[in-house]
Picture 1 (cartoon, rainbow, N blue to C red):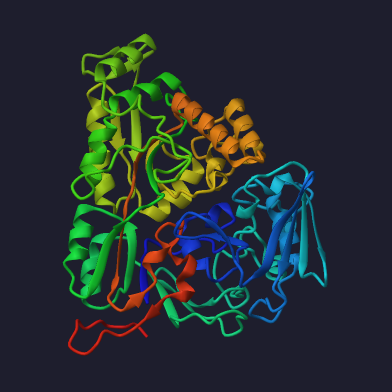
Picture 2: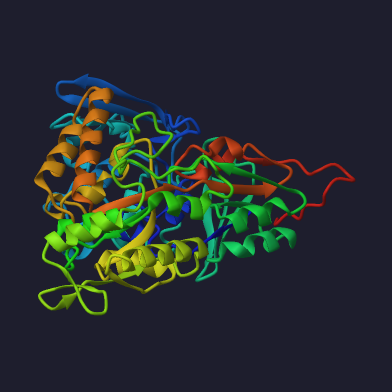
Length: 526
């Protein structure tokens, strides 16, 4: 099976800032084991092939006991034990006493949850792991996802040792292993012959680089693709629907297209400027232009924490739905801006001029970018487009803060802790806060929600955080992106994964039954 990706990972460790991407997680989800995964119903489920059990045995203090399958081993023959859990905790706890090779501090994608752990210890020859917390962490099932092989990371380094796949780091603890990497082109996964669990049914999965989704229908026709899951566009959905022998459908998604503001750049550090931008933007028109032609029920996203479809979701963004240019202009005027002779808002002689960046290969976002540029121009804000390939935008531009505004897809999760790190102050350990947003009240809500025992109370606190974010506006959720999923007729069980954060969570159970003679011909990439 061949699946298109926009770029190859710049780091194959998804628990590092450089590896934190959907692409990396899609590739590695069946290479390195996780304690739990999320199924199609947004439920957190034990990885029973890896762990015999994982139980909350005490709440005062919180104590979780993991029992590792005694057959679980890395593909080089090294047993998977408590030492792997201990190392993964030390790399992500955010404590400076733990250091990576070369004496550098560990670069962890997030410390949320791990920083609440007091100790990780092993017993029963390392097959039993006891995790004791110093304060309650409600979403403990989200931890150790995935588990990085400690004996390899100690040799090559956690932060940068997995920047490139090599024979040294190609160690698997799942049903698939990395067989080869062609730089800039593809990653090939094959069955891990040393895997102790059920053998993967599909013998090979190839992740092939193609940053242009408009190519996908043609590639299905010539047999170079077998599966696509991509944010949908009218052109892509209609194109795939017209290919014989291909099953095509729209599926719900937890991904939100979001407009980010870089608060470290004047004048976006001014809350009133951000509010004026929110007033000037017509999110309803954006949704209709982006996905309304094939998803008439689509509506602007109303929550920064929970995606539409998640039970905890509530719509807090009703203030900013349609455009109100008069209110936006009045707010800027009250903030000291005046219209120049050219119609541009200026303050202290400086024009209100900003840049906006999107994925240069995404025609839908390029169109949305034009709409936003026109809407802001109407209230005197000059916007210049500076676009990049997706990999450059995500790996370089956002992480270095070299942008004013950017539209990016934020992958959601039923677990709020998966992505609230982007609203946690950098001083509290966040490495994903590209907006540089900092509010002690937000930090306190995140801390309190993550340590709340009752899920309903935790959700209430996270929705209080969302209400604060709609006030502070470090970013603006635009719309939930439905996915278009397409695959050759004959493949089975793929559709059951549409509710998960990555379609590949159960890919080892997928199968292929060749169509009967006389039906549509389907080419296999063997």
